[in-house]
Image (cartoon, rainbow, N blue to C red; front, side, top):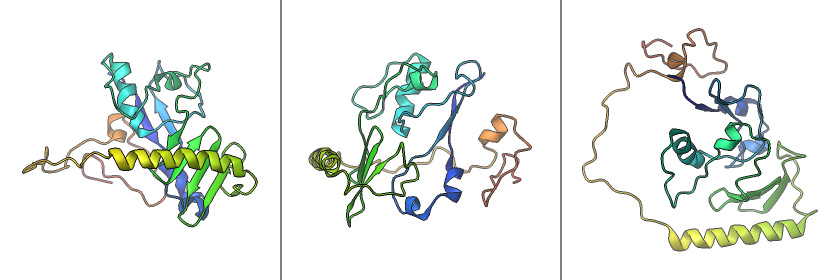
Length: 199
């Protein structure tokens, strides 16, 4: 049985500038793999988040998408529908930043920084002073969002006497096992443990 897999490309952060590493919220490319369904070589620059995974997989499975959740069904992006408009009109990074189209505003606690991600994907040039009206508009949206969260934050979930589902991870397969990629060469310091217990 073949299915869809989403791979956040964490390794992209190995060689990025220190300025981006100092931001709490960053862009992260993701690879989607589903032979015969996700077109090979297709690329989308639209925004997607981990919150979108649940409603998107529910759509693929033919299940009812839950109401009142933060994520959106982005199946059309995975299927490379070129006519699909941006699904996330705005994206909030909790209360510390906001993305709207190509614009990203970040509250560093010392100042507000503005980036044009079409021209500056590496977030090297803070152009807040050149676009005060854009900063004002995005900050107003961020302030309203922060106020909403403060007034509507749900209490943390609590389970009395919780019990783990499994007691050990020994023998659990990892993705490279599932895909049959036994000869993967890993770069950097990351060396996964295979289901046979060997790196």
